[in-house]
Image (cartoon, rainbow, N blue to C red; front, side, top):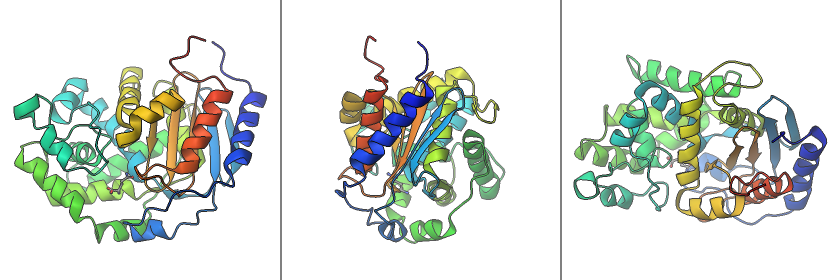
Length: 319
Ligand code: GLN
């Protein structure tokens, strides 16, 4: 099936922007002081196709903290290094059905009882912290460089840490430290807890724009090769597995509703970013800071659904 043409894509993007620009429902994330201050009027949409065409509306170049969407690219790196069997055994790939920072999910997934590893899934905090503990490197800085270099290769430009977000999160990340210690107690953390949580917190704190997100997603849509820079970041099998995990758990406890409405693998972050990927075709990146109760951008979800419908992207539709 041919990818959608330029005009259809720009029209779908413009339409979604116009339709949802006025929606002010939801709240900024409040538990991270830096995110609470974000300007909720900002609204950016970008689409990047698997053949490298770029489309934008609104504040598509506005940078914001990547937050949970970083989990996708660290997963890609760990999958590439360790292989799928290790990821299944050490982290897990089932939906947890619980909020992103759930401790209960760790208890429910205790593999002594269920056969699934306690971290549950690499796209919720516990699994992302387990994944961070598997990132190779001699020390924290080397491992951070691995994470950021991987994300930058997906984006096709050098991404950078937002120091203010990092400090803001480090000052209040006791909950994530507790998750790391709990995983360690179950022998499912693979590094030092304090170092791992520091790495995980840095990973949440690099800045991206909607265009970056769409480019990172387009790399997955294109089987792991960045369609703008033409560099291979991961192989097609790794890319497909990352998308499968996104479909399972990309929007935490509302992942089922997302898949039901949009029909595409997606990932959200509490910074207000949303990424949706149509394999073989394109990716949609959106920024809007106000979140629903599960921590997903309200306008981001509406705009992604609207664009997916306009371009007929639902993976489950027969054609
Ligand atoms: N840094 C955030 C946290 O760990 C990321 C969560 C998210 O975006 N859902 O709490």
